[in-house]
Length: 182
Image (spheres, rainbow, N blue to C red):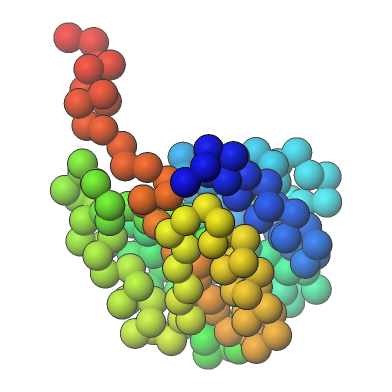
């Protein structure tokens, strides 16, 4: 994969969100979404809301939709587990919910605690009735996000795009522990 493609996908996704009229961006800070979050924070047309837990984002975006605004929820796969009960809201109420989910517990994971939810994320979302699409290369991300936006906002359904850990890069436990003072 080309380095330019790796670094360009957040810029392309931000442009897609802007063109689609996304105004609310609900986030739990995440390294995988860091560049996209910064772009949204700099965009005066978007309101970035930092959440204490991911399910708050579902409620926030329900309110945004009722108030006439489109939104997106940016989170990590471990946060999907926090949203399970709340994901019944967009399904039962038939409102669109666009989620961009960076994967953990997937490719080259170092943290054993991330593996169960990482392995279950797609199956859990699909079992709840969420439409799931996946992007594992930087070149795929903009097209998959564009299609997911159309699905969510045209059919009033929850749609999740899983951004694979192979694209984001797996963290190295040795590097993390080497930086801890003894």
